[in-house]
Image 1: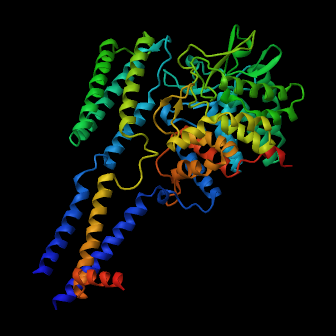
Image 2 (image 1 turned 135 degrees about the vertical axis):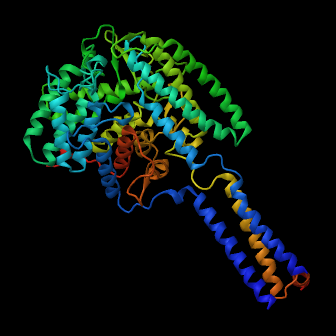
Image 3 (image 1 turned 60 degrees about the vertical axis):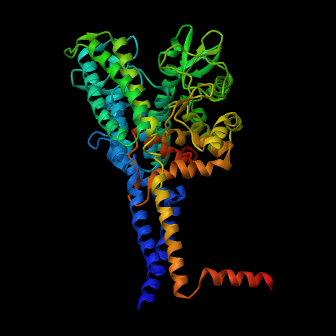
Length: 196
Length: 401
């Protein structure tokens, strides 16, 4: 009866320990990869210097590209939001601010043909604002893909550690039973050792 | 029959438990993610080979920046030439030099236009709409240095001849004279500037100027060395546009052409951060220390102790800091470590190995002989320069006869 219980306990430990690592990890490699792509894309569009005249077509294209990237970012944001309420709240604020800036950008920017002059300062400032917002978003959650945290994520580490420790305990109990060692005999030996 | 089963299960559980513990402990230790590099020279060679594939157009030899609409800068060509000559890669050096001569050389002198790329009409050329025809003095000086090195490395006087012409033109076009003292301006505009001239302290290259002084006796290059150090120290200690200074040199600073006083620019793109420009200063000063044991280099680097405090407190450096020391760029950038390693090597050797191992060597994957994650054109160059500097693999080739 005792050994059956140990057997069941051992099996439970194995199952729980095995499943633990799957219950978390918001920062999956895929999510990180998508965000890294967005980050890289974000760096591509140049910002015209304030006060300089820019070409309407080019600037409009830049805004349109950024709008596309915002959609990509939003998808990732949704993915992350489904994992963590805290994360969702933080992202929501950023997302709202981003949407406001993009809305302002698209309202101001008029689709023009290449070569058509537009007031560079206003558009450049909008692009810069958006660029900063996107950078903030990326940096808040993924400081740098080059220096991403190494090793298992915290929940996986905890899960694996608990699993391994319980395995050691369960294994130890099973082996001690096989060799006829009981807690009572261990206690007795210790007491006699101290007494001697 | 029952007992052996439990015995086997017990042994399996024990083995499994200990194995997982060991795996978790090993995998979570940052040290386990640092490659076992047996030859730094191989690392530099492998990364250089990959860089050529990723950032140099094989047909033209044009170095381009994928993150900025594939533009080419004279800075990019200068980095390619420096890396090529240090790597003894004559073919790449010549390709880059020929591209620069054919496409970037300014019609009025021997210096190079700073920006080349696709124009609005889809043709390729110098981007004059963005001031691309102007010089960037750091690129000119680095190309001249690379040419001098090339003449020694490959025993070809034609490189030296071009270098001499460039050095003369650098003084004529890029150097600003204030109260009789020479300062390296940011571009060819500054020497004629009224009121204030723009300086980028990271363009100062005292080690190069010492070498230029042995080739060009008509100009006082050694005065430029000492005046460069003066600007570096003064701009780092001055509060500029902040209430206090962290003691770091700025990306940009203005010099009054009458009084010589240093001030911050009001233009947003000429900020006083210690960022993507200024981190190159420690690297350049470390070269001056390595090649010439210049005490000014060590004394100046010693004043950048903010970097040690930041590292000791956080075990990282951010990508940029405001002049008062507050963080302006949250991310970590390989380029920042590649440049700032010069400070740690000369002034904080206790932390130098940690910075090198955990932030530069860490980027490399021994299994693929490449960076773990792709690096941008700028990060790639500066991570390479930093690793090479740390391993004393950037010799002064002009000193080799």
